[in-house]
Image (cartoon, rainbow, N blue to C red):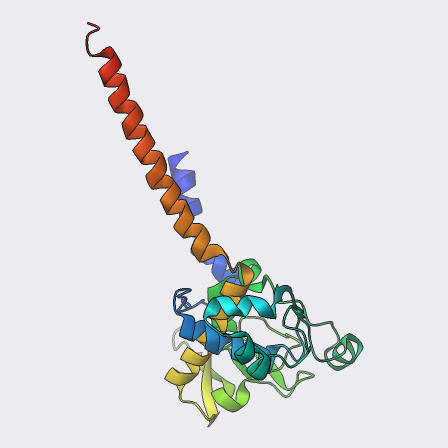
Length: 243
């Protein structure tokens, strides 16, 4: 039984690699960094909300990130006039389906369903592919219908294929590597931070109350620990004369 458990644990990374098709990189998530979350919200509204909705998220909730109602109205309220409305895509669903072949999914819970690391790696893994309908492909999500909407910032990557022949067996092996063919307006470090801010916001949007929930969870554990200690002291007091 122990051997089977050990084999299963060792197989988990391989299963994750097979599922995603690429090695995932750790996303720089910090839900206490309100500046990052504010930047991520702006990126989401400007680039994602054109096609994708976030029907479980209201603009008013952005006030929890330190934004005033007026700041939200002036800078982030593009698809509606009411701050209490949910985040709806600006593009008509029929137009999106005709353009991409599928209706772009709602992104309210995408970070919980896909994981932050998957999103972070995915948004950095687009490359030019003339064979695809949009002209783009992705190593994490092959043949994805979505184009690289951030290409002006990241630049244009291409897939470099190298062949190597084994001198002994004559077998040919191929290696694939993404290389930057045309740089974007941001260098790699700044683009990684740009995507990191967006993913940070997507994680926040999946459960806006999770930071306060965790805080109250810790408070509850301290309260329970206090009452446990009190009950233990009472028990010793009641039973101190019993031998």
